[in-house]
Length: 324
Ligand code: AKB
Image 1 (cartoon, rainbow, N blue to C red):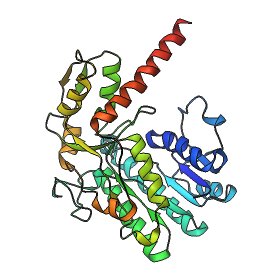
Image 2: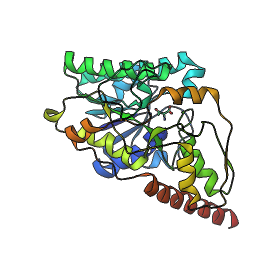
Image 3: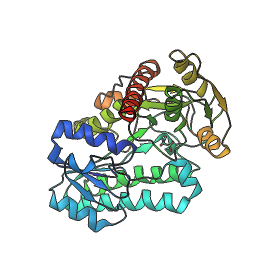
Image 4: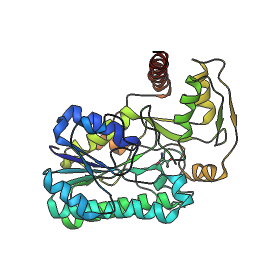
């Protein structure tokens, strides 16, 4: 990767992936595509940016030509719970951005990363240690866009040789930009409440297991898969990756080790619960480990320590700034 375009660079993944990519490939070689505010305060100072509506193919093509792009990170998406409330929007954002990125990549010779998700599986997929190649019959529009994305990306590779690659992200836990509209968002929000001394009300039941991942590992995955030796890749779109699986009681217990007074109760959101129940408990990521050396660094305990430390420092800084 030399010149990279991120479509959807201000979202949960994009806002941290852009920082990491710029630290590796150079500030001027990573072009951040943005669509709607809010942008971080310093967004326009950190490196090249370009306004891109992912549903507009000309805007993507113009940016690819202007900046001589060789790799596109296609991150535009509407997450699972929001997409269930507005299926048409979920479908059009997911599919239009994908088709546009694939067509531009085919025409202008770029590699494309498009994330898939644990949402690409459904009720009749094996729940535990879900295999790499298995039944994929999701019952959410988000999941359907992810399965179509996997299939179309493989199609563009086998038919036209477009270098498409992908991983199936679990719920991603991050401390910079909030996810918004996902089923796994609770595992991010719980940290913010704990650090601010507030009670947390969990929208999914105790005993609901899902794969989760700390953002630094997710970023490693998104970069390593694009840098992987293509001759070693048996699969492409998309690889199971995993680092931890937990239910609300497990993350609550882990946070309580640091905040013994912290309180969590439940108010189950039927939509999120139904989505979570249809997803795997844990994925088998053997193929990613074997084909491109996937190896996560964070488990639940290590992630909890880091999340709390980062958020605590941030709130302390904010308090000090307000007192000045
Ligand atoms: C969501 O909850 O929708 C996402 C995902 C698992 O893809 N975080």
